[in-house]
Image 1 (cartoon, each protein chain N blue to C red):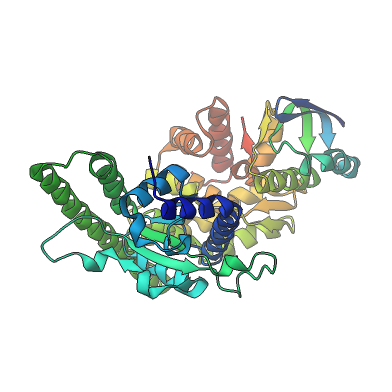
Image 2: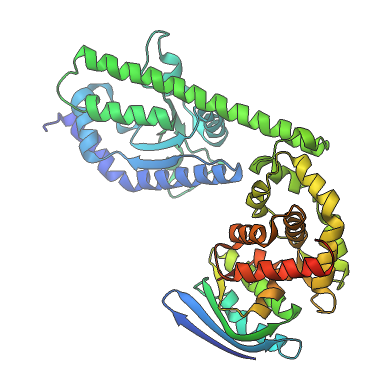
Length: 100
Length: 359
């Protein structure tokens, strides 16, 4: 799994590539930890090349969502492939996180 | 403007004391805001000002003879609280009485001064001091001595007062009687409107209490389905058993999320009473569980949002009632907005439901 983080205007842009699963969830959590304290609460995650997420990934997205909401920002995940969207749908996470 | 020596002395005293007034203004504002926050009181506005030199000069020019010293002028520092409802003025004044020391001799309740056949300026003006329990600044003991004015009125009273001030009080020309009368008529109308707003609010609060008690007592068929009643209903965790059953599929942790987004979906499904929602739950829980079983078993996904139970219930309900994929697309559009993926989502759910013989 590869992650690229950049700042664009007042927004944090994240680009995810690959799978989020048991083998790399800890690393993923460490990578996104600074986003939970950053000055700009708005986060935009590009999931075009994210091929899968396990429950660990969902938990990290949930943590991000909570931290963004606490700072009155918005988390948006975009360009998810249908397989990843299905994971969000069947767990009810589509009701929690904005997916476009 | 030319003032006499006495008034000039008062004006000099005013200039010297400006830092004191500023400190008094900010302290009184801070304490009042803190008090509103602690008591969860939301007001339309909370403003303050220090009387300008120009305004004070004007006052002294008109009635400077009335004041021996600057201390006799009680509105150098002024705070104004504007409430949404007229009956909230009494709540604010009660809090002010607890917070500040009130100079009752100079306090004016214009609401009670009004003759029964007259309508006009309705506002409550308290003349206050900061008590030592709130502020004990040894470097500035005058902070407890200097008085300030606290005006309290409703937003409609505020509108009338501002209009009147703007159109009448400030001009040099006396307003003809007919215009005065029109302003009074408006004041009367706004007083009635103020009263009506308060009554409507009381009625709505009473209605909410009644409905909440019907929901709490389980009289669901008597409870009309609306945003308020649905909110009261979901407090009872009505889908908890189904959520727990779904969570057991993968021994999942449940994250409690809001069910309110489903309010519009249930409206779309023509729910008329909370009883209809309860029947949907009782009739289709098993099918909703079977759908979750098919979707989740073997995935290892061990975290669920609690809304997934109502999500599957709505999917099953739509399919059982024969609304088909089109019905599902409509539901997803309400939840997630219009997008092409909703068609794919609907097809997937339709196929899964078919495979487990829900339809």
